[in-house]
Image: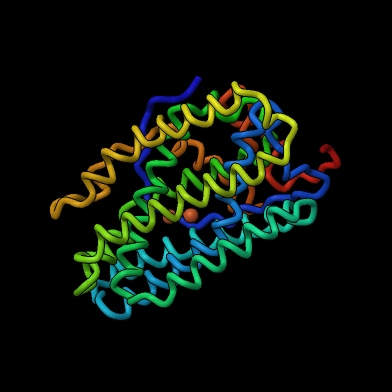
Length: 298
Ligand SMILES: [Fe+2]
Ligand SMILES: [Fe+2]
């Protein structure tokens, strides 16, 4: 059963180690391959998107922040995002080794963020804040349908995405605070929100469909219906929050955290840098099955 007890804790850095040796990172979700394809598209974007967010938060601090507490909190955000994109980069290497489409999408993601990097720091800081809002909404959406989306998935791949989403909840307000401390970023927020939303959702749709259309399942109308339904359900979660986030008095801390992911993060082992694998039953597996457990299973 999913816990309903919220856990409020300060963000911390977890450099989770994953072993992809012998895993099929292309088709890791045999029950819902269309979901796996969309998630892989997101994974391919992260080693480009998250370094941009990190660079913009750093630049924003340099230009606007004097509060030592904000600087310390931003450092945790930077370390968490750094751990995320490195974990996705490892996953993507395995994915690209078997998929030329993934290689092309990786290059496309790099091209998008090279273009964004030419914009001002003020825009970039606002983009980082907007990106974090979309990431938080993604976590809220995923937790609401945890079993629906991840039952039947490879436990290791599911754990990668869920760990990432869980930490997005944990640091949801930090980029917003960096934006507020910057002299010019706040007024760029509405445009940055549109660009962040279009970039993340657009890349997920284009990349997910590109990866999915190579599969034999592409002719199954039920899978297409599901993709459309997920799109609407995600829009139902993200649109109200995104609209509210434009208001001057909005702060991400006003958003209620989904409870299970925060509790799950407490299972992180800082000695081995591992998480217990998420299982179909919606709970953590035993300590013997952790993210670094070597395996030859496909
Ligand atoms: Fe992240
Ligand atoms: Fe984040």
